[in-house]
Length: 294
Image (tube, rainbow, N blue to C red; front, side):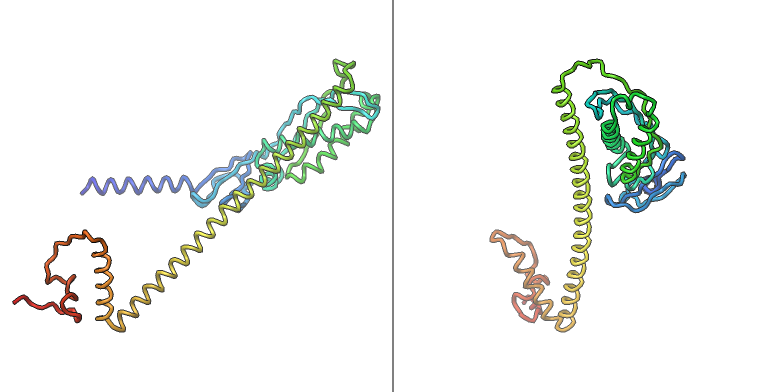
């Protein structure tokens, strides 16, 4: 008996520990978190410390709130006078609105991928509006400001705050004599990659929303079904109770008929019972009174 009590106590203790572990989460000083319930946003936590959530129903997605350095690969751009130059830039950003980031690109990796596309696009746009001599001259500060301003506007819609955009290097490509045809192919391939990246991002967003909506609809349908089943069971129980109260003898007779139908439904049914048992009380007398053996 003592061992059984100890086992029960251990089981209860273990379940309590598991429940407690699933109910709390920690946010560090350098983090912010989203609490999601079935994929839907419930709250944003920006304060560091120990926080609580609904166990097994709510999930937590963390985002770094420090400044993140994004070093984009070198990019070949074409100036206004159709000259090719290499631009090497990096960006400093941080997650300003984690909910927007989650809804748009899911996580920081997605934000970096999308921000890289935005930076490359704006590098092409800004340098494409300048002549070759201006891109390599002392107007780099004006170029950097123009790129930074345009990137900030687009990144803000994603919940990202761009702190700074810096140009590390602008230089002539090693193969200046490369045919224009190859340049056009590279340009078109880059545009195609950007379009595919945007398409994949949109597909992921649509699929995530569809999965989230499916979970919510199934949960609501199951809840409504359980509610209807409960109402049906309650109604059935009330009907049976009312019938029994109106005519207990008939109700007992009716239930016995149902039992006979179920018991003798199969032809090869074998039952070992006394003929005078209550189960057969309606066989010899419709009133249900068993006759004594003579």
